[in-house]
Length: 417
Image (cartoon, rainbow, N blue to C red; front, top):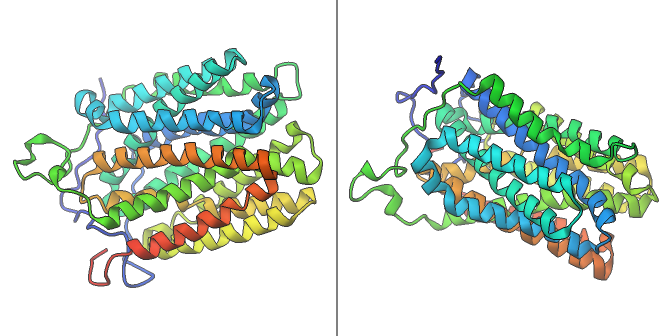
């Protein structure tokens, strides 16, 4: 069996406790895209077929089930539960089977969850399907991100950003495919089946690519009696997790409810308004590819703060518009801002973990799960009471909280990047 290894760059200094620096530029790191890196990229692309596929399908599923927006929002809660459970189980799972097998196991569980959603409109079954897909997908996502961070070290934020760029590009096609199939005899359910198909193809084509789990400080018991895993995280780490919570909640609000607001404000049908998610994901894709090189040399904290300002501008255009073209423009601009938010937010969490990638990934999965559950469900409940447009005011609130969290968690100027 031919095995491809992630080489240990022990000669490259490990990240310190910060992704920030005192200047806006930093020495340029080098990003090498070897075959194991592309395996992780494609695994995360398969993850994106589930994420964007079920997000685009949720408004259509709600119509098929004949439930309220708040009840439909329970699918987000189910996704949150799946992500939280996977976050709790992730460290033990990785220690037992290794990171390579964990990513493939996550893909398998994710594909099974999507198949359940495609088979029925029964609410308990679709809730279970969303939960399973989220739990399995979270394992693949966060374990894969930790491997990229360990593998590329100084170029870790850029690799994470680029992986998300590949994933969201695939998401564009999936969301568009579902919106097209919704008006055909095949229906939108045929579109979400691309997830299990993609997982099987990837296993057949790259199943032998070997990505060993790299030892990192605090990830293994043999680190010694005073290993870093026993030390509590500092408050800046928890503040960075809080920022990640805001960023993820914001992105999921757009993913789950932007199409509904687009339909309400422009008079478009639900099927036609689903293309709004395509505009949003197109903005994310362009943003991630365009900023990939910037992430190699620009201060990630300033980059993240600027992205939040762009998101606020796009949200304003979308929120005030009643014209389809202007609304699409607002969604694209919002996507441009959101493009780097999750990658850089996660990179900040990993960098502030003191080299404990596995534990930090698990913590990120739990915070993300809570964000996925609270955000869409809260907006759905507010939409039932005050309308979707007023409920979307949650977005600028999350932006303000994220900016405050970034300011609070920024390390002292003497801390090395």
